[in-house]
Image (tube, rainbow, N blue to C red; front, side, top):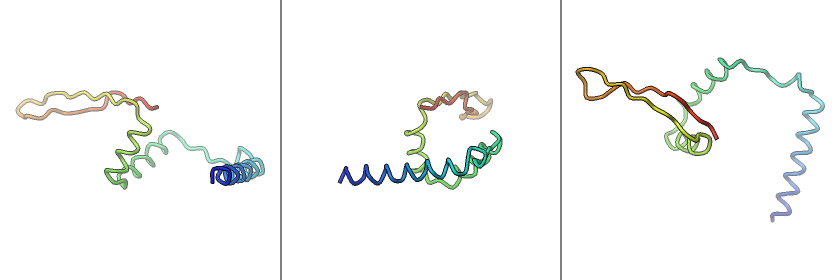
Length: 86
């Protein structure tokens, strides 16, 4: 079974390399960082809690959060200081 999967993987990789070479690097879309962030935010809203948790455990190493107290309330205002990816 592993041999068959490796063979299929090799065939798919070969086909992908062939198509990439035919199209060239100029055919690949270039996105501005603002577009990437906007797309990510839109997609994040559509994910379920389980999918969000799976993404975070797979790609995020550390999230640093700061909680600033707000006068007159029990809760503070939380803000993300830094995110470290794997």
